Image (tube, rainbow, N blue to C red):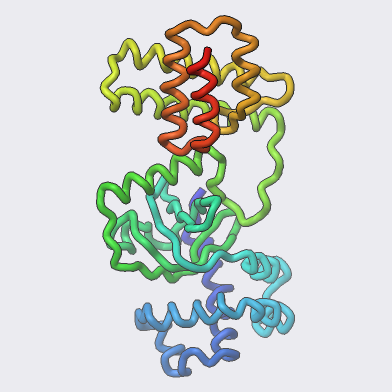
Length: 299
């Protein structure tokens, strides 16, 4: 879900007093500039004030303890949750069903699905994808940004756009798109099955696309696809613990070979192409891919 207008107003009813409190402690803005923010758009001043908050997050505890604005306990709990903020530079890679996909630069790469406030991201930013600086915080069971978003004059050409799209696909396949700052709970067996099915479906779909791009005929593409799909089905049926096509180990492959028995030339070629694709698209480590490819070539 995205926020309603009422929810956005509720956010600002809490957040603006926090900024006023922050300025009283840090003296980031003059009183005249602070007052003018209510009527004048001053992105530089807003950015400076928010930076003062997120670089001095200890102020949040003092704000809660003093409670000068007499917020109720529910509102104070909301403010407390903002201590889990993520502040810094992100790439806003794309917008999916209204939510911005904010990509971090850390490894493992995480994407935050962030709701806009009054205006959509397409309306407030010159283009997408774009490199931005902002703070991401929780609010009413979703993630939002803090109302100020600064963009950098970095242009994204076709190659960079493709890389960003790959980041998104990778995060989606590995279930690394966050909609909350809370630790992700362990999946139930049913939820894990659903996630593995989604992951495998994505991996196999892009494998088919990769094969076509390599110039292979539709017949060969479909044949290799079915070979890879059969391997994925085997991984999902393992009694020792179901895994996806993104969690393969050398032992998994040895187990598959031993259970299948004789590997035909067609299967061998299909498996080799599939693992070459997994390595090329960095879905598995090159070292692991080379070990498995060596095994395939000796079958």
